[in-house]
Image (cartoon, rainbow, N blue to C red):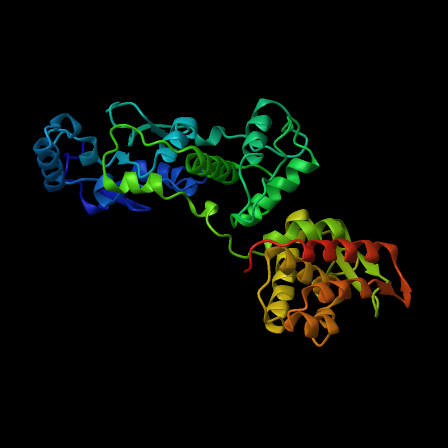
Length: 386
């Protein structure tokens, strides 16, 4: 049995923002667990606390007449490295809803909302991945949260009205978009990592929109955390995922390579309109691979837009230009009349140039024209400049 407050470095392991006893740290850092959800301690001494740290805490609380908020030195679970004082209230809500499979729960110090502890009862192997075709209450639980959580750019991943109970194509697309935004492997399934981040994003955004200071806030860090909502409520920064939905809708997903004979010259294409030496005749293209190709192609098109356009753009304008360059090649922007007009700040005249890129083989193609019209509409509907 380790001695309270005297754990050796070999008995401890790091977690984001502190240290815990190795079993507790392994559970905290597990796939889909508290660490991946973004749960953090208020500081290093809010995790493992040696005897000197326990004495310091006891002295500070007793000076305020609140000795009950600090254990007698040598008896605190902090001294065993099996508890954490959480930084923000939404983290406690996450632990209450999802912590038990990872051995983390609220079982002591009930007057302190921030204090959670490791029970040792880890059952994380019980998580069943949700995927297309599943249905029921567990699907509804996550679709409700995807209908509440907003993308960095603005709207929710699913429509709020009647979140689906069935894991269909619409839910799969929403999960893929969420995974892209949160730098997860894109597979369209709700595994432990994706589940943890959906829940954490929901709790962060709910706290930011409805926060009310709780009684007994134990530190300035916790108070400031409530007053400073997560980054999702601040000014969005451009990300390729913003364009992925728009472009993906128009390109469409194909799970195999095909020869595009409309292009000049003919070119092998797969996934979401991806071309290149990595597309081989007859190859199968998984949705995850197609999404990786799409994000890579969007980044390439975005670099061209950034290099050639030197005036402020809204996120919508940027998406429209990237979609045009993605579909028609860099020449649609670089060296074009559109580029000249836009750099001269003639935004409406530049928008009309989109419609000129709707020909193939010298004739207007209805599908291309419809895409150009939607790009033009997107370009003309303002948002904030980025």
